[in-house]
Amino acid sequence: MPDFEQFRLPDVGEGLTEAEIVEWHVAVGDTVTVNQTIVEIETAKSMVELPSPYAGAVAELLVEPGTTVEVGMPIIVIDVDPTGPPAKTRVAEPARGVPAAGAGTSVQGGGGAVLVGYGVAGSATARRPRRAAASVQTAEPTPPPTADPTPSLTSNPAPSPAAARSSHVLAKPPVRKLARDLEVDLESVTPTGPGGIVTREDVLAQSAEGEARRLATYPGDDQPWLASGRVSAGGRQTRMPVKSVRKRTAEAMVASAFTAPHVTVFHTIDVTKTMKLVARLRADREFADVRVTPLLITAKATLLAVRRHPEINASWDEAAQEIVYKHYVNLGIAASTPRGLVVPNIKDAHRMGLKELAEEIANLTATARAGRTTPTEMSDGTITITNVGAFGIDTGTPILNPGEAAILAFGAIREQPWVHRGAVKKRWVTQLALSFDHRLVDGALGSVFLSDVAAVLADPSRGLVWG
View 1 (cartoon, rainbow, N blue to C red):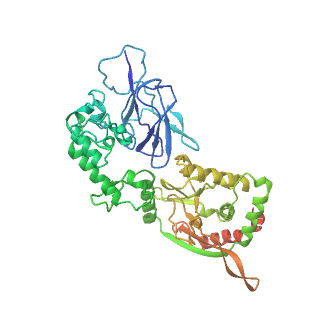
View 2 (view 1 turned 180 degrees about the vertical axis):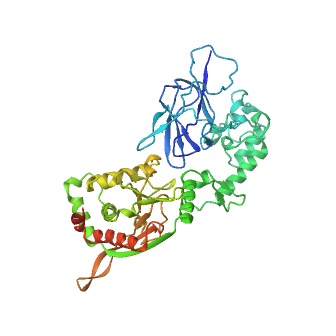
View 3 (view 1 turned 135 degrees about the vertical axis):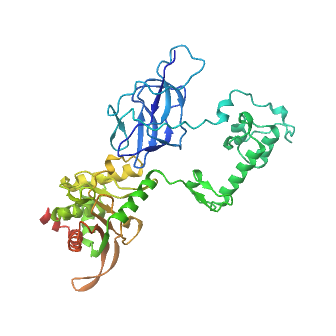
């Protein structure tokens, strides 16, 4: 007999309690093996691919893509004995044989592995009922086309793509004609009629929603949020649920802004020598396979300044009423992604040479923009750089990454008139801004730290002396 096992959403760590189902990599009826990737989920911190803990045949997908589920909720049913005689009625049983928490498996989440423990005790969450249309689409035949009392004016009209897709949807002939007249794809309509049939009211409601979306879109503009947002009846607004990275970022920034007293200091500097160094490194064969930018030199300057002022590399433990000084530097690089702002960090960046640092920055930003940053890569940061200059911005007052004492904003580099050796010349100039937690860092420490970063950017040869 078939033996059904439920796979519950596991705890992917970092204290996360929910995740969104992004994409299923299997369908009902597919055969899966142990550790085969079956689904991609999005947590508040990263995209993670989950492997199957069972071998067998997929019996049911319990959660549709785009749905947020809690840890411990069943998401898929797998028949671990598909060769047995079929059962007439299948009842999804509670998960059996699930390894205990901690007996996890390594899940590849983009740039690194995440430990996922199965058998997490979750809340008893009822599964959302499946759409009625899905259960009856194959149970009732489509009404024959001859039943349509409004035949086409042409003898052999070619069906439109929408009509071809909608041919299996349950709807009466007058409703199908109304859908054609209003250019509504029946496939996109949620049926409310008995037995999953599409009604006239369903088509009119879908048409009204489509008109609202049309009004909400500028001609020729791409507004991707319209696909998953709720457009108002007049088409003037779109409401999007706050979730995933955006939600976590908002919570973290509000907590940081209202728990750590922020102070920001600024410095405008001539970075012409840094720009010349970048040009030389780009021409150097040793750096031919890496991307060299002014951000790389800024990162190195920051690491050198931390070495000279290690007390800035600290955090405030409110519960223990202690200051925690870090003997390592996990350098965060803020990255703007389609999912929102993420701040992965380079582990033990203080031990790296310039080329290795360039490679790590490139890997970190590429992984972040692909949405594959793991929770581990965003945890335990000690100090952060945000490159606002990439957007043409001169400077700003950045908010501290929670758990860190300082964040450096690196502004746009522009050619400007500058007094150099007693004469006004055209030089490359940028602005730096350092925000710091005034509980840990006083004005003097923050100022000399920023001054040291600026000194290396103004004359990179200083790094040879300090390093």
